[in-house]
Length: 384
Image 1 (cartoon, rainbow, N blue to C red):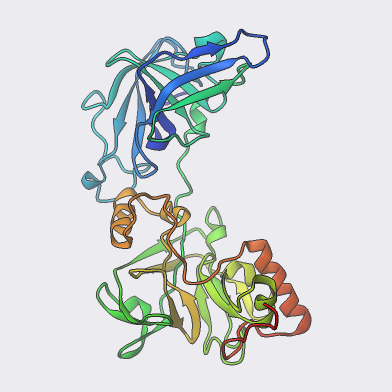
Image 2 (cartoon, rainbow, N blue to C red; image 1 turned 45 degrees about the vertical axis):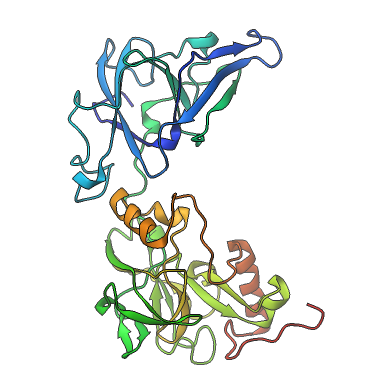
């Protein structure tokens, strides 16, 4: 696409700064030729958002970065944006020309025999405060100074169309309204719960809710079709499990307790995303849904709770799940979960095998007509 004035948004881990100028290793055409960038360190993290803003260009029909353009980089301030979305709201961004983090940036696509640009990266000369920046959408830079190497010969040019917003909404591990969660006062609909309310967990008794939120997802017949909820019919997991139909988001994990799990994974209890179980009778995608409300419930740790009589997880704030939230919500979740960076992997309540492994397990249950949930813990197999 031609640049149309829309700022190009990216996360801070994709931008590195170096005080030196990138240089060549060997000569063009020689084995091992490429570009080296010495002592480059990330400007920000995956939780920081920046944008490139067009300042001046001699050719407004450009579709890629090239010498002759001038850009500046601004940083997003989530505290100024009630919507918490750096891609679709402008409140958290400074006005163009005010408070840039870096100014007077010139693309150096012709640097090192054309190695200054590639399909995924561009080198920017910082004429405002010195040094160079490397913007690379394909790699996450380290905060520690690191020598980077880009092998030659150069390929492609980073185009403006690579800067795309993520899908409008992603559903993490979510309940739907009407789901009954066990509490000290008995089962309560999840939509009536609030932060501070206690819920009964399988492993640690009653635990207070740290954060709870809801999100409306529309257009399930179109761009958000992958977020259609999964319906688990009463008794589909085993006798009386769940007690009534349970509807959750596709990624919401369900406890499986079986001898097949024990044989395959060395533990009788595992967690599976609901979407991996749709081959089982009574578990299906709700195809007719046009929209759905998803409710996220965060506890101090990843826990298991009774929901409509089935055992399912609370929210797990892993790196992928955090991408479903705007910066403000992400920062709040990380604080409550005790995370010092968004890439941290916290302990999970149970083993979570890969999707293909769980689908294979489901096929074995289906073949042998076995329930996914046995009523009691399964003793370890002899010799295991």
